[in-house]
Length: 592
Image 1 (cartoon, rainbow, N blue to C red):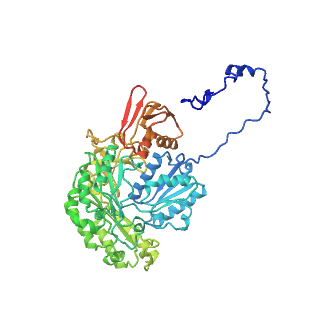
Image 2: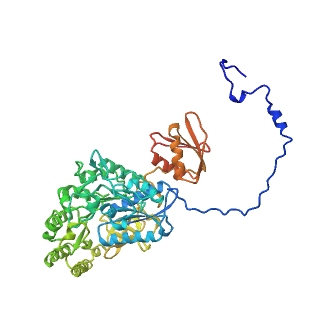
Image 3: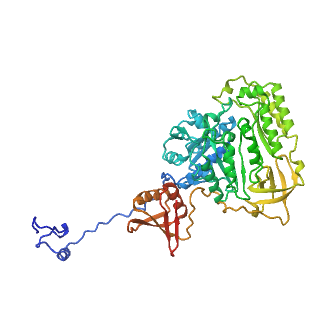
């Protein structure tokens, strides 16, 4: 044995007595030992245990969205984040494990559909997560008890909420986004999203408004005005064009009020955006209330005349009666509305003005209603949204003396009859127009295109037309559309943009295409363990093998890499480039 004073001590495996048996002696000393074999009774093979996965990120999610384009944009963002985190979005509600219901609080029927969907999901034992304006404005409703809720400014945390719902937990995130105490426009604009139409990007430029309309429940959910900075909106538009989008919609509760909270205005934003619009692409401006657009009519006319901006504006009047407008607290009179329409019609020839009207608002007299009828008869709006008044709980209008239900129905019917008595497009038959093709018709018989005035033109279903500007001759006109015949030998203009994403493909994350099954991902050693943990949580179709090399750590990945790597880049957001060394000497470097 070595003495305790020796400067070096052997390994414990070497500290044995010289009289101990050697390894060879131990081996041969066991030859006389006969092992006893125990026979086991034959048993039937155990049945394979079938259990549902409770690992978040492996389930199928079905989402339904009601309401405005702002809500649609929120839904696209939520779907994108879920898909980027491993969830599979499905169009089949029966096949889904989770129902994500994105609600609208504008009208009673929309909320009724939302409530009925919750009941149906519960009857089918689906996990339910609710979002949108209804739970944000009324989170204590009885039918929302026990459900997980995503607030309208918390859509960037949808994965957290769905993860917890899958585990059987109830989570409610209803807070506001703030920076140094100042309310922000909402979640980041660069989040992953799945566009319902890969050719159309919906950008919310602000949330909330400056009004306090007595009938509006949306104000309870969206709150006061909060605008996104111009540079963030421009960057979002730029990214959209890089992903093959050819049409951008700007949306909010009131686009005309944009920027008043951050020291800018709508024309300033629009002039920056039009610089980014490639030839062959178009921009559509969303709804604006009369008071705020009045201040910018000259600039707005110039912008709406721009060749890459639709000459279209949605300006809700709601009523032509000043007394009704006062009860609504609309902050303008009918002449203000007429001023907007007359000015734009003069400065932007052919412009389409869309408007909204509420029939049967509390206190509306026959005289008030006749004033509204005369307004419609005078202007013959080509796009008119007629709404029967519904008292929304918690609004001042709900406490006012109501117009009898039968009277409301009759007025709605009368105004609808007037609207359908004229055809706004008959005089356009025989015209030659340039139209941008972006959609498929509901009956799947045509492609849907829009001309400069955002008027709907149906064209033949030629796959070469999708996402392109074509020239057509108008040969037929209906109440809501025209039909166009492509001009022989006319040029089909392809916008100078990338190919659009595939339907269902996630926007906003790098799209890594790997033709090989095997690849090596190289990252810094300090980042390796969180990478490994995140990768394993995202997929069950990949196996990681740590190989170790120098100051970095390599993981050989076996399986489907494309979406996994894209997810990691977005979720982990490292401050350094990713390097992908592919078999055959190929290499992909992505700098986030």
